[in-house]
Length: 243
Figure 1 (cartoon, rainbow, N blue to C red):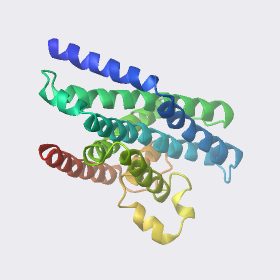
Figure 2: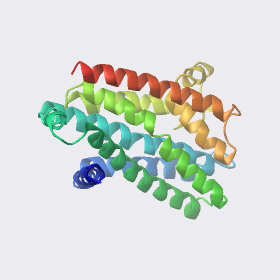
Figure 3: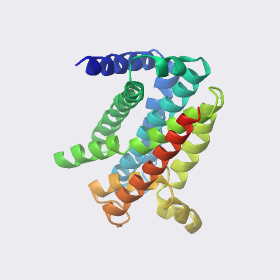
Figure 4: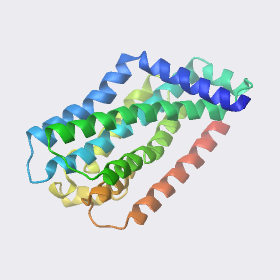
């Protein structure tokens, strides 16, 4: 019970610190919503594009908080000695890691609800209840590999370099995975690159819920994400032990 209380308190305070950081809240929530309104609603370039782009920009939006929260916060805590203090404190380090992921999921949930509401009310996106629920679950669970990317970057980079490096990875990966423009509209060479990116497999699982994936088996995408996550965990453990 004492350990559970520590996990809850750490998660609560981490979320509170993010709510008091407008520089994190505004870009995390506004970017995917504005992009979806522009490309999925205003520039609706084909029939059914609104629902397709809703899923794509939900993936894009929900990847961001996990990567930025871990990378920026962990790098900053390392630089200011807070991570060292937490390592020697009685509190388990897993509570610290859990708190970051909890905060990221809360923001991801906010982004999902805003995008779902925007798509339903302004773009006539119509899904049955089980699709809305399944889509939300896939989107939330699928953020784990990107949280691991952020954690690894936070352990490797300085507090000044981490946010910039996240942008250098996050934005090109989203574009190359077909999250901004449907993959079939991109050059063939870029389409092949997408197969090696976790964001592509993440988005394909989400698209499979509404029947707009490229047709590959969902198990293939799950396998790719599990392997990628396992590699990230190995690298994180190695980096943490040598920190």
